Length: 246
Image (cartoon, rainbow, N blue to C red):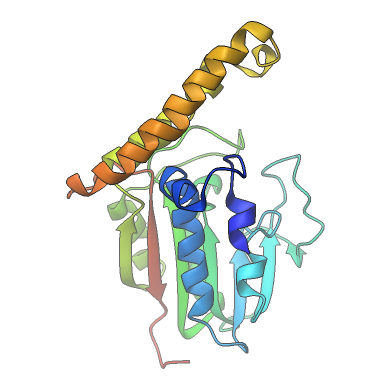
């Protein structure tokens, strides 16, 4: 089950708490699982920027193809990829796939419009793009980290690529975003070289319980108060290639 791969909190923490604390992780997996559930067993699916292929299980019932340039994280195992390639030059014919997923990848490509144009090219008419990208996030997979996306920027690029937007929605609002930021407090207060020092353990435990459990749980329930949701850690988009239904 996907939940086993997404967990960061200890196993003894109840699942309902994890779903409310690690909302950034669960929101993405739920989005991908819904994408997988919408596809038939004969559907061809391209995971553009698959990394280690963490979403492959959600598409086990389809004809899944995972590709990546394999430069994002030197610690990852890219051996399970179906192809190593540049997303701006996909090695597939046009109208090949029923769906393309591109999850938290667009910030890592220097030419995002070209990537989306390639996704559009290889999609069959009526095929769907399932896309997510961050709006507010720390620098990661450096130096391959180039952009952040508002809903308007995402819409602009997707439509420029020739796709029609079905939906764009934020991954929570201000309170979920604040929760995500607070959960990193131990990371910033106690860098890797300090974590083994005995005097840090009581503080790390205290801050962990407070900022990684209690306050995030409270903030989860406060998020509906933010009806605008302009401050979010990212957006999820579904777009369709114009043409006949597949």
